[in-house]
Amino acid sequence: MGYTHYWRRPAILPLKEWRNWTKELKPLMEEEGKILADVFIGEDEVYFNGAQAYGQAQTFRIARSYSPFYEEQKPDDEGKWFECCKTRKLPYDPYVVKALVLAEKHFGDLIKWWSDR
Image (cartoon, rainbow, N blue to C red; front, side, top):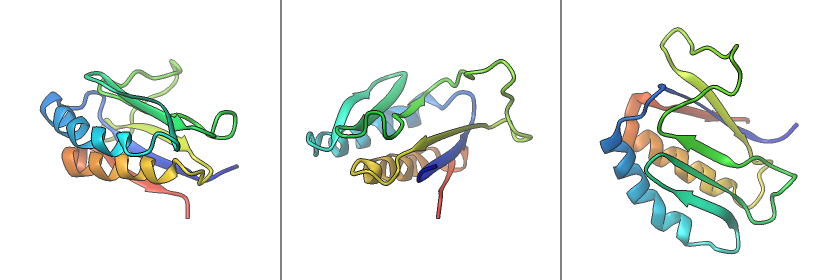
């Protein structure tokens, strides 16, 4: 078990909002080279992990176009797909939260997120 962030999102995120989100996200991710590792912010996906998180937590990843990992996965009744990232509250956790807050800002109701208490 561990501390986890969850979100629901549509199959495809709009390109204009994606570009605005990544533009605002990029300087935040460049702030802390000692905390973050494997940072990638591109036209099709965003991902990063904590520098000390390997084997302890999951990589935060959002792709502009969602692809299910398993054939059995289905969207909810609103057509949104479920994703999550277990951070275990490691030092990179605040960056996951920043990324999700900015995603909600730029995508509005298209992305809804929540965290363990």
